[in-house]
Amino acid sequence: MAKSLETWSKLDNSAKIYPMLVNKKSQNIFRLSVSLKEEIDSAVLQEALSLTIGRFPVYQVRLMKGVFWYYFDHNYSKLTVYPLDPTSIKKITDKNCNGYCFRVSYFKNQIVCDFFHAICDATGAAEFVKSLVYTYLNLLGHDVFSDQKVLTVGSPVTPEELEDSFLKNYKRVPLSKLKIKDLQGKKAYHINGILFDNPGNGIIHMYCDVKQLLDVCHAKGCTMTEYLGALFMLSIYESQIKDKLQDANDIQLFVPINLRKIFPSKTLRNFSLFSRIGANPYEDMDVDKLIEIMHTNLKRDMNKDNLKDKISTTVWAEKFFLVRFIPLFLKRIFFNFSNMFFGKSKKTATLSNFGVLNLPDSMKEHVDSASFAITSNTTTPLSLSVISCNDKVCITFTRRITDTDIERIFAKHLSDDGIDLQVTSNFWEVDNAL
Image 1 (cartoon, rainbow, N blue to C red):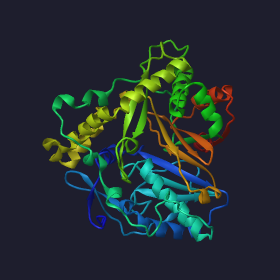
Image 2: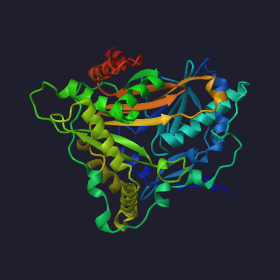
Image 3: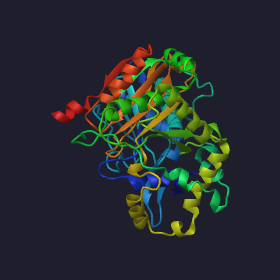
Image 4: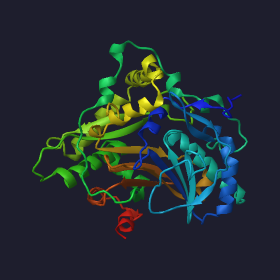
């Protein structure tokens, strides 16, 4: 029997930092969207949402401010479906989402779900999104079957879904083994550009065929993440650094690692760390060399023993008795001024590859594609995210700057490698110019 969340509950270890980082201009939000082959019926989607949320008590919560930490309390408010504002990814606030930490919207044939990172990572969120789409198709009268790939309404909630997998995998280690320096990193190159006047993100989607992209990756002897990461760093270099008459720090990508692939876990909360991958803009700007850099760093950072030590480091910081009893307002001041882990000087951009959105065959015939986007901010104004579904890859750039030169160069590299692209945009730069 799963623990009831109709009382207060702690944030997971990874989630604790995200409310600390919220300010007027930025919030750690990611978006998962599923495009169907028919236009969305908003009334049916509302009914599906009202049914689905009952299956996911871990998300039926409101973020509250305590004396020492933020915490979750059960949210009894109505969870409402909203028409999508197609121009941007808006902040999730207590007022505009009835206290929930996520928002469900629709636009034409798309079901769009935005999540504040405090409640989950993309892997956990995807289980909710799949269940919502499944319930919606079911209510429309389509014959869909879960095939043990969807958490359906009425299926039991397990304790494993609710667990903090960081705490589960935490082992006390000597202070000398803590990976504090590995998490700190060093100064990185910052992408330059004119920021949008209004808060929000420019969004560009690039769709291509999975097999076509994988064929290129196989020919180069690398994974999709390694190939796209190499092109991303090369595009940043060619747009921002090449032929410029100033020194530049290393281009450093943050690449999230889904720990469920390494440690047994079915949690629907956060359970990911990151790999920090650096390349010297004056020595490493060759595709094959960048692929090797991506491969070497990801292999190192996905080593189970290294990850155990990193988990122990992040949990140790939470358990350290002086940290536990510092009042929340002082913790916020510390996180606002400290760049120990997430400082603006430590990162050029984020590359997040979700992988495959695994749907039952009976659902696939009603689904056209999926997309995945992570918000950028004023200090790291460009992010790249990737998802595959129904034999289509969606590569998404989100940005806070008006210039699209990096995206243009990136698309040209893909085209030069024989990959056919379909490109769409929310034209946020046009909206800001009005």
